[in-house]
Length: 406
Image (tube, rainbow, N blue to C red):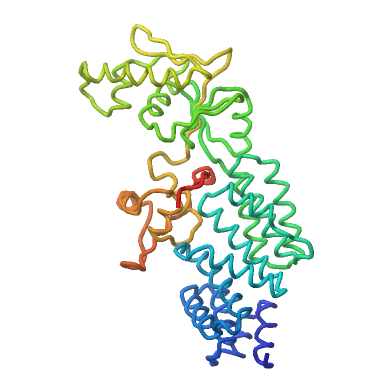
């Protein structure tokens, strides 16, 4: 390693990006290209950083596996910032293994943290938990402890374990202060703010109230029968029944829950569920069939009773019914959640994160663009989508929380 490369590396470690570029800004050897790529990433020019890191990795070639693996890790971090998930995760795993085998445990651990963050962005919480549990932090620098604790906090938040989230955020903030990285401290503070803002709405007996994550957790633990319109499920302290693949039944259930403690008139249910203003006997027959299906699924939680004018939802025991509604209604809720991070997403990345087809995502984005909720930047394959943050609410509960097939 020559003196200029060493000086540039020290400057990057100290956060002096411009100083690093002064040392290697005009050099084209692989080591200089790699350092320039890292510098460009720190300046936010991710596209340029990606190109430089790819050139550096090609320049190192198979004869320098350690340097090449470090480039792969840096390139994966840039891809994460660009919300690009097309590269095989195995490539990053192989780089982490190569680094660990050759004694570079710090960069190997950094690769594992990048993979963990990727799992979180794609909503693969079970995989993220496993990756976090397998992370060896013994002797790790404070920055790695902060990133691991931040990941633990996000997993806890998206699992509605707010006490665990607060504990993890305290650990993350202490480690970030020790690491003296302002950007990391700012990111942790941003996550902490999610606990203070409303995350959903409670609809109960004709009233609506915004609730924080703490309050959502309390409602779910209260024994109340909760019709969860965020995750499309019905739940109480005894169990959960998912309606994610039964949209008609869930629409029917939500309408009955919104009308509780009264009943809901038949024609109102038909209009809400079947989207028609002129019901006929075929609609009424279909309603009876769907009510029968719903009654069987709800048997552990509640009864559905026919009344003179419609149907009544009656939870077991002396307890109430609440609807937990998302901050944004409609099929585009998960897209609102993903785009709220302020980064630019491609349609392919959004499709991978939501588990929907790319065409379905494109149609949803077109509708959101027409409504002024998102905007496109770039064209063709370089097109990306961005959205302003949702005023007054956090979108943490809109993020995907089950592993989509990929």
